[in-house]
Image (cartoon, rainbow, N blue to C red; front, side, top):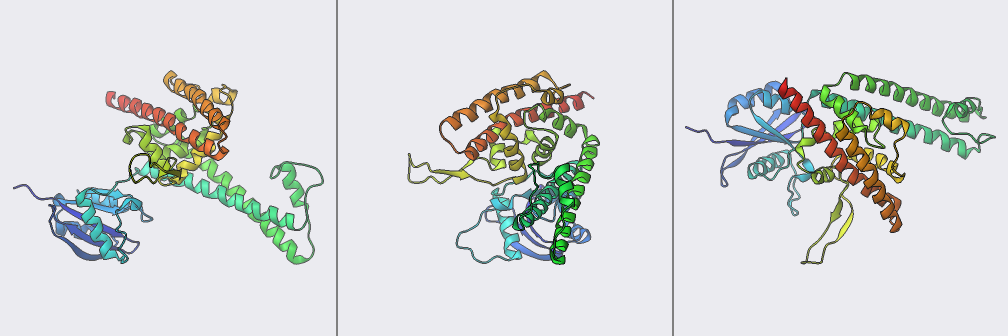
Length: 379
């Protein structure tokens, strides 16, 4: 006799998991199974009690990561990690508890109303954590530099001759500064030490990132190398895009990937034809990916050119990848100039360019993944 699937909704927290199950069928019962500790042995007992062969489970992506996903998969339970911002919410519902959240997840999962996120493998997740740690270190360095520069500005300290800030000469000038009274000197020394600490931390993480890329699986390394064929996409931007997107083949076309990046315009249209009202970009999806794309897009304000650094990055790459990168230079520069000529704000122009740049990135990513798959199949 064929067993009926049951749908498990899990509201996961650091110490507890609220559990609910929905029986198959539109009118199947949806009931709460209570709360269990968020421990592997407790999850194992729950699955053994319910029967793994009959279950499909889901929980929201969040700070608890993907450990529960991997455990459920190892126990033979099909699991999906769903996007929390896309879980349906009733506008009049003002009561939120763990029990009700678990019931809603089970009910919506059964109805097919939840959107699953891509779950990275161990190599992708480890490299992504390192990339994000480097990004956090860069932000901390910027904050430390701002605190010190504003302190100097408040007290009228500036170099006697013009020099680039934070380079060797400027740092030598900084280290020669003295303040009276003692309180100001203590403040200055602390701010300067924090800048030095942030700089050393950033250098340490960037060195670790170079080593991690060299030791990464072949698919990640090939993708990082291929993406650097694009203008404005050096190693750091390429690895950021690679680990934040993960699998490009999961997007059938570039447009869903653009939506994932949050670079598409928001829209509020109702009331029939001719009522299309579009606003700013949605800023949903992956903010790390969006930041990297916007930084890279500024390079396309320059006319197409094959300069030395870009030529070196393209050495050893396939002609197809090089052709996509060259086409991107022409199209995106033309896009920039046309939008700028229409009087668009620079930030809007760069956003539009970044959105189209993602289309070329998708084309290169899919091609690399297909090549790797073909080699693996042949082997």
